[in-house]
Length: 139
Ligand code: AMP
Image 1: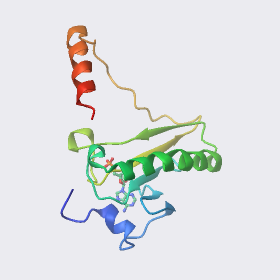
Image 2: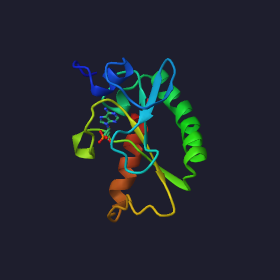
Image 3: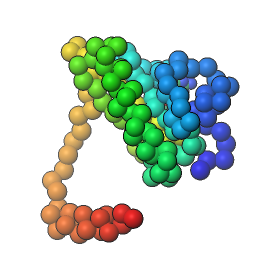
């Protein structure tokens, strides 16, 4: 948990204005101020955690419930044909606001922005051990 209030906590508390989409006891949602496309929405927990893996089960499940409902409305209202969900954790992953947030980025037939990435060949020996270790670490 971060000690200083993030800009998103200040939005939740009404200190900073936003284009609000949705609010319940655990989740808050608003338009991204620098949208990648029209209808780019952020969905955040009210719980002030930096990383997804720090969230309480309650915040996690409420986010899971809210995301599809908000996506449905975005698709209906914007007419987007596709969308990306992006969720950055940590500076190296591109996170700039250190309060968990999901980006919902609608895509249109004319959209050119892409999240294409370069892949590498899987190391099967390492993959076999890695899968077992990660699996065992899930509590
Ligand atoms: P990330 O790079 O994943 O941490 O994304 C942070 C996002 O927060 C960026 O897309 C910003 O445009 C957005 N953002 C920052 N400040 C505000 C604000 N005051 N209102 C709405 N969106 C914001």
